[in-house]
Image (tube, rainbow, N blue to C red; front, side, top):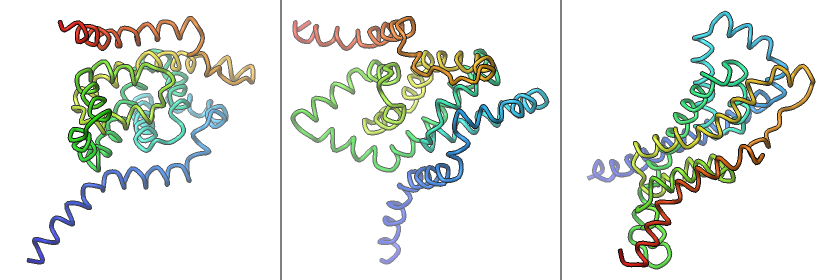
Length: 244
Protein backbone atom coordinates (compact mmCIF):
# COMPACT_ATOMS: atom_id res chain seq x y z
CA UNK A 1 0.00 0.00 0.00
CA UNK A 2 2.88 2.32 0.88
CA UNK A 3 4.47 1.66 -2.49
CA UNK A 4 1.29 2.60 -4.36
CA UNK A 5 1.15 5.93 -2.52
CA UNK A 6 4.84 6.75 -2.86
CA UNK A 7 5.04 6.10 -6.61
CA UNK A 8 2.59 8.83 -7.69
CA UNK A 9 4.42 11.28 -5.40
CA UNK A 10 7.72 10.46 -7.09
CA UNK A 11 6.24 10.77 -10.55
CA UNK A 12 4.66 14.08 -9.54
CA UNK A 13 8.01 15.43 -8.31
CA UNK A 14 9.79 14.02 -11.34
CA UNK A 15 7.51 16.06 -13.57
CA UNK A 16 9.01 19.26 -12.17
CA UNK A 17 12.67 18.20 -12.24
CA UNK A 18 13.41 19.70 -15.69
CA UNK A 19 11.98 23.07 -14.67
CA UNK A 20 13.79 22.92 -11.32
CA UNK A 21 17.04 22.22 -13.18
CA UNK A 22 16.41 25.25 -15.42
CA UNK A 23 15.72 27.49 -12.43
CA UNK A 24 18.83 26.31 -10.59
CA UNK A 25 20.93 26.72 -13.73
CA UNK A 26 19.53 30.21 -14.23
CA UNK A 27 20.41 31.22 -10.67
CA UNK A 28 23.91 29.75 -10.80
CA UNK A 29 24.59 31.14 -14.25
CA UNK A 30 23.41 34.63 -13.36
CA UNK A 31 25.45 34.69 -10.15
CA UNK A 32 28.73 33.43 -11.59
CA UNK A 33 28.66 34.52 -15.24
CA UNK A 34 26.69 37.76 -15.49
CA UNK A 35 29.91 39.80 -15.75
CA UNK A 36 31.08 37.64 -18.66
CA UNK A 37 27.85 37.95 -20.65
CA UNK A 38 28.30 41.59 -21.58
CA UNK A 39 29.54 43.62 -24.50
CA UNK A 40 32.40 44.95 -22.38
CA UNK A 41 33.59 41.42 -21.65
CA UNK A 42 33.59 40.70 -25.39
CA UNK A 43 35.54 43.88 -26.06
CA UNK A 44 38.10 43.11 -23.35
CA UNK A 45 38.68 39.53 -24.56
CA UNK A 46 38.32 39.98 -28.33
CA UNK A 47 41.99 39.38 -29.20
CA UNK A 48 42.20 36.22 -27.07
CA UNK A 49 38.97 34.91 -28.59
CA UNK A 50 40.15 35.53 -32.14
CA UNK A 51 43.51 33.88 -31.45
CA UNK A 52 41.83 30.82 -29.93
CA UNK A 53 39.43 30.60 -32.88
CA UNK A 54 42.30 30.72 -35.38
CA UNK A 55 44.08 27.86 -33.62
CA UNK A 56 41.01 25.77 -32.70
CA UNK A 57 38.19 26.59 -35.11
CA UNK A 58 36.05 23.48 -34.65
CA UNK A 59 36.47 23.54 -30.87
CA UNK A 60 35.57 27.24 -30.82
CA UNK A 61 32.39 26.56 -32.80
CA UNK A 62 31.39 23.72 -30.46
CA UNK A 63 32.15 25.72 -27.30
CA UNK A 64 30.36 28.79 -28.61
CA UNK A 65 27.22 26.88 -29.59
CA UNK A 66 27.14 25.07 -26.24
CA UNK A 67 27.49 28.36 -24.35
CA UNK A 68 24.79 30.01 -26.47
CA UNK A 69 22.45 27.05 -25.99
CA UNK A 70 22.87 27.20 -22.21
CA UNK A 71 22.35 30.97 -22.16
CA UNK A 72 18.99 30.56 -23.88
CA UNK A 73 17.98 27.41 -21.99
CA UNK A 74 18.58 29.12 -18.64
CA UNK A 75 17.21 32.47 -19.88
CA UNK A 76 20.39 34.30 -18.93
CA UNK A 77 20.73 37.98 -19.93
CA UNK A 78 23.30 37.48 -22.66
CA UNK A 79 21.58 36.18 -25.79
CA UNK A 80 22.08 39.42 -27.73
CA UNK A 81 25.77 39.55 -26.82
CA UNK A 82 26.07 35.89 -27.81
CA UNK A 83 24.56 36.68 -31.21
CA UNK A 84 27.01 39.54 -31.69
CA UNK A 85 29.84 37.21 -30.68
CA UNK A 86 28.76 34.69 -33.28
CA UNK A 87 29.05 37.33 -35.97
CA UNK A 88 32.33 38.67 -34.58
CA UNK A 89 33.99 35.25 -34.48
CA UNK A 90 32.52 33.58 -37.55
CA UNK A 91 31.31 36.44 -39.80
CA UNK A 92 27.71 36.85 -40.94
CA UNK A 93 27.89 33.45 -42.57
CA UNK A 94 28.24 30.83 -41.17
CA UNK A 95 27.82 32.78 -37.93
CA UNK A 96 24.08 33.22 -38.42
CA UNK A 97 23.64 29.44 -38.78
CA UNK A 98 25.56 28.82 -35.55
CA UNK A 99 23.49 31.47 -33.77
CA UNK A 100 20.12 30.26 -35.02
CA UNK A 101 20.89 26.60 -34.35
CA UNK A 102 22.14 27.21 -30.81
CA UNK A 103 19.24 29.55 -29.99
CA UNK A 104 16.75 26.98 -31.27
CA UNK A 105 18.33 24.23 -29.17
CA UNK A 106 18.20 26.39 -26.05
CA UNK A 107 14.64 27.50 -26.73
CA UNK A 108 13.59 23.88 -27.25
CA UNK A 109 15.15 22.89 -23.93
CA UNK A 110 13.18 25.47 -21.93
CA UNK A 111 10.02 24.69 -23.96
CA UNK A 112 10.26 21.02 -23.01
CA UNK A 113 10.99 21.87 -19.37
CA UNK A 114 7.91 24.07 -19.08
CA UNK A 115 5.67 21.73 -21.06
CA UNK A 116 6.73 18.71 -19.00
CA UNK A 117 6.31 20.50 -15.68
CA UNK A 118 2.93 22.18 -16.04
CA UNK A 119 2.30 23.08 -19.67
CA UNK A 120 0.10 20.06 -20.35
CA UNK A 121 -2.00 20.73 -17.26
CA UNK A 122 -2.58 24.37 -18.20
CA UNK A 123 -3.44 23.34 -21.76
CA UNK A 124 -5.98 20.86 -20.40
CA UNK A 125 -7.56 23.55 -18.23
CA UNK A 126 -7.79 25.92 -21.19
CA UNK A 127 -9.46 23.21 -23.27
CA UNK A 128 -12.04 22.70 -20.53
CA UNK A 129 -12.62 26.40 -19.95
CA UNK A 130 -15.47 28.54 -21.25
CA UNK A 131 -15.90 32.02 -22.64
CA UNK A 132 -12.95 34.17 -23.70
CA UNK A 133 -10.30 31.71 -22.55
CA UNK A 134 -11.81 28.91 -24.64
CA UNK A 135 -12.16 31.10 -27.74
CA UNK A 136 -8.57 32.27 -27.37
CA UNK A 137 -7.33 28.68 -27.05
CA UNK A 138 -9.34 27.61 -30.11
CA UNK A 139 -8.00 30.57 -32.13
CA UNK A 140 -4.43 29.59 -31.27
CA UNK A 141 -5.05 25.93 -32.11
CA UNK A 142 -6.56 26.78 -35.49
CA UNK A 143 -3.70 29.07 -36.47
CA UNK A 144 -0.68 27.57 -34.73
CA UNK A 145 1.79 27.96 -37.60
CA UNK A 146 0.93 31.62 -38.11
CA UNK A 147 0.78 32.40 -34.39
CA UNK A 148 4.17 30.79 -33.72
CA UNK A 149 5.82 32.63 -36.59
CA UNK A 150 4.34 35.91 -35.37
CA UNK A 151 5.71 35.32 -31.88
CA UNK A 152 9.19 34.97 -33.36
CA UNK A 153 9.02 37.71 -35.97
CA UNK A 154 7.54 40.58 -33.95
CA UNK A 155 10.55 42.42 -32.44
CA UNK A 156 8.49 43.64 -29.47
CA UNK A 157 7.86 40.09 -28.17
CA UNK A 158 10.56 39.13 -25.60
CA UNK A 159 12.48 36.01 -26.59
CA UNK A 160 11.72 34.36 -23.23
CA UNK A 161 7.98 34.84 -23.70
CA UNK A 162 8.13 33.34 -27.19
CA UNK A 163 10.01 30.36 -25.74
CA UNK A 164 7.58 29.63 -22.91
CA UNK A 165 4.12 30.63 -24.18
CA UNK A 166 3.80 27.83 -26.79
CA UNK A 167 4.45 25.26 -24.07
CA UNK A 168 1.20 26.34 -22.42
CA UNK A 169 -0.85 25.64 -25.56
CA UNK A 170 0.23 22.07 -26.24
CA UNK A 171 2.14 22.98 -29.40
CA UNK A 172 3.75 19.93 -31.08
CA UNK A 173 7.52 19.82 -30.63
CA UNK A 174 8.29 19.57 -34.36
CA UNK A 175 6.14 22.59 -35.15
CA UNK A 176 7.77 24.57 -32.35
CA UNK A 177 11.30 23.76 -33.53
CA UNK A 178 10.58 24.62 -37.19
CA UNK A 179 8.89 27.95 -36.42
CA UNK A 180 11.60 28.87 -33.94
CA UNK A 181 14.47 28.13 -36.33
CA UNK A 182 13.02 30.04 -39.26
CA UNK A 183 11.16 32.66 -37.23
CA UNK A 184 14.23 33.96 -35.41
CA UNK A 185 16.38 33.95 -38.55
CA UNK A 186 15.61 37.53 -39.75
CA UNK A 187 16.47 39.11 -36.39
CA UNK A 188 19.46 36.83 -35.93
CA UNK A 189 20.75 37.80 -39.36
CA UNK A 190 20.57 41.49 -38.47
CA UNK A 191 22.45 41.15 -35.18
CA UNK A 192 24.95 38.65 -36.59
CA UNK A 193 25.83 41.14 -39.32
CA UNK A 194 26.27 43.81 -36.64
CA UNK A 195 28.60 41.44 -34.80
CA UNK A 196 30.57 40.83 -37.99
CA UNK A 197 31.39 44.54 -38.06
CA UNK A 198 32.46 44.81 -34.42
CA UNK A 199 36.14 45.01 -35.36
CA UNK A 200 35.67 48.57 -36.61
CA UNK A 201 33.44 49.40 -33.65
CA UNK A 202 36.15 48.26 -31.22
CA UNK A 203 38.78 50.31 -33.02
CA UNK A 204 36.66 53.45 -32.63
CA UNK A 205 35.94 52.65 -29.00
CA UNK A 206 32.21 52.74 -29.66
CA UNK A 207 29.35 50.39 -28.82
CA UNK A 208 27.17 48.68 -31.45
CA UNK A 209 23.80 50.12 -32.39
CA UNK A 210 21.43 47.43 -31.11
CA UNK A 211 18.45 49.53 -32.11
CA UNK A 212 19.27 48.95 -35.75
CA UNK A 213 16.47 46.39 -36.00
CA UNK A 214 13.99 49.28 -35.60
CA UNK A 215 15.50 51.22 -38.50
CA UNK A 216 12.98 51.51 -41.39
CA UNK A 217 15.13 49.56 -43.87
CA UNK A 218 15.30 46.65 -41.39
CA UNK A 219 11.95 46.93 -39.62
CA UNK A 220 9.72 47.20 -42.69
CA UNK A 221 10.85 43.91 -44.28
CA UNK A 222 10.35 42.15 -40.93
CA UNK A 223 6.90 43.68 -40.60
CA UNK A 224 6.21 42.44 -44.12
CA UNK A 225 7.02 38.91 -42.96
CA UNK A 226 4.71 39.46 -39.98
CA UNK A 227 1.94 40.46 -42.38
CA UNK A 228 2.48 37.28 -44.39
CA UNK A 229 2.28 35.21 -41.20
CA UNK A 230 -0.88 37.06 -40.18
CA UNK A 231 -2.56 36.67 -43.57
CA UNK A 232 -3.89 33.09 -43.03
CA UNK A 233 -5.47 34.18 -39.74
CA UNK A 234 -7.18 37.14 -41.40
CA UNK A 235 -8.43 35.00 -44.30
CA UNK A 236 -9.88 32.43 -41.92
CA UNK A 237 -11.64 35.15 -39.95
CA UNK A 238 -13.10 36.71 -43.11
CA UNK A 239 -14.26 33.37 -44.46
CA UNK A 240 -15.79 32.50 -41.10
CA UNK A 241 -17.83 35.70 -41.06
CA UNK A 242 -19.02 35.15 -44.60
CA UNK A 243 -19.82 31.51 -43.89
CA UNK A 244 -17.49 30.25 -46.61
